[in-house]
Amino acid sequence: MTSEYDSSLEYVNNLTPAEVKNWLAEALEGRKWLPKAAPDEPPDLAIERVEQNLKPHTREDLRKACHGLVRDFTEALTADSEYLQCLLGLVWWFNLRESARLLYSLALDEDRFSQLPLPHKQRVLQTLNAFKLTLPEGFWENFVQQDPQNLVGAAFSGLLLHGASPALHILRYAPDNQVLADSIACVLENHANRLEPPERDQLIRKVREVRPELDSNPSFRRVLDEWLEAFGREKPYSNELEDELERLQFPDNMRPCPRARLTPAA
Image (cartoon, rainbow, N blue to C red; front, side, top):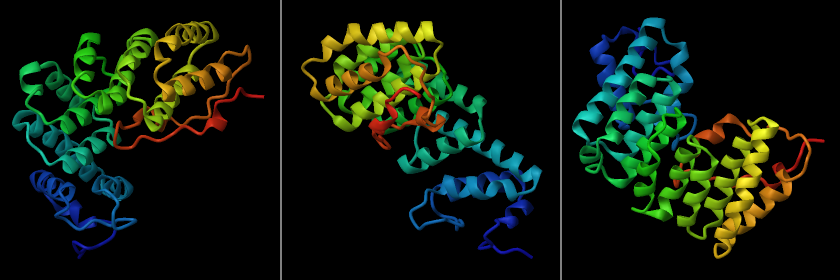
């Protein structure tokens, strides 16, 4: 007989679908013991590490439970911030596009979306960007002006789904913040590495056009100059950035891109 404190969480295999949903909600809230790799490891990461060892029917119940919790959130519009971050982390881990579409519908409902606290809005939009669900350009233009310091990153990633031009122009709202500038340079580098040469040339030209608009922003002026120095050469480029960079979280997990990676392949 397995215990609640068994590191494999095998006891979850014996729960009904309704019980799995309750267990998942409590686990994400930090009210259930989980086999964490470190004391401060988020609950969703602990679940991701061990869920593959559960029985197939339990893993399916977990996915359904996760979707049900997302539906509950989109209806109630209330959740603890850390709980929501963990829940949406599982949405990505389980690749729950149906759940992402619920969030997409919420974002497009201006009256209801406006009721969410700013951190909740950020987490919803980060998830939509990760799933490449494209929101209208006007949505991002209005959204970023609520808090440019914290929202430019999410807006840049969201507008990049429309194309380089709207994404680059939104940087006029960017604060002089080196960490944010480095993070956006990473996203831009990863995007460039995925393009065919003609499309990459168009991107380079667009960055050169926009670059003068940021003369008064030292951080962004510096990273765009470095980006142009690396990508403005007629050489093939290596795609060394991990796909995980697409999930850059602004402002929670902004990470600078190593400048050494801004070099053409040999």
